Length: 255
Image (cartoon, rainbow, N blue to C red; front, side, top):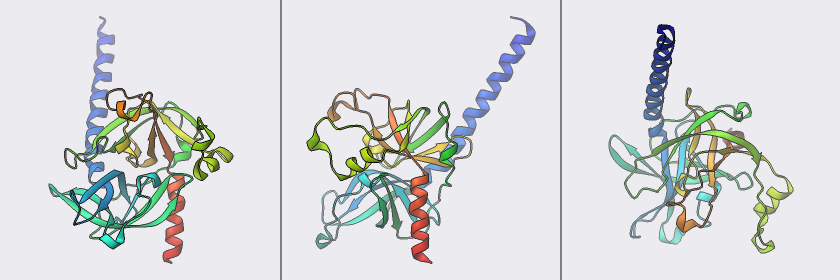
């Protein structure tokens, strides 16, 4: 190998190593902002019911997640409540929460959480996302069975494509799906493996940490039962601009 070629490979290798180190630092910074989302009922066993992932935004007292992560109803007669779960200072803690805004068509929801503020993630510009760009997402792919230890994956934007996927049978079309078929909008398709527990995970720029989307579904190639052993490697994310609309709406109500 010529000296010049060897020197070039060395420089490229050092640059790659610095990039990997930067990602590790970013993940460490992001993890405290990523929360589990579910419900809490003190008399239930177990009292916590994990439903998906979310992440802290704004003033540190709000969290974004998918609308489909939330239960259809909360049994307040049994003191059930929405909640987010987070690891703080090496301990797993719970913050009660309430739904303040929701957009079912775009599958985004905004929660307000109780307690002291948590570290928040900054939002980026989803209009600047391009096919071929690389991003990372952090969440709970298999729930919290192993504790609150979020996992990070990265993938390329393989396509920016309409969200509407026609139902196999007319009976499967509900109002939300009808609205999407009638007025489809673009979402991000990723060549990355996510799982149902990843719903609500932040999709973020690997240099800045700014959130550009929210993981909302996984393409299942066989059945839900086989998704852990036979993942499709295709995931989707909602552009963050739809969540920004919820934040602005909530801010106007607070003024």
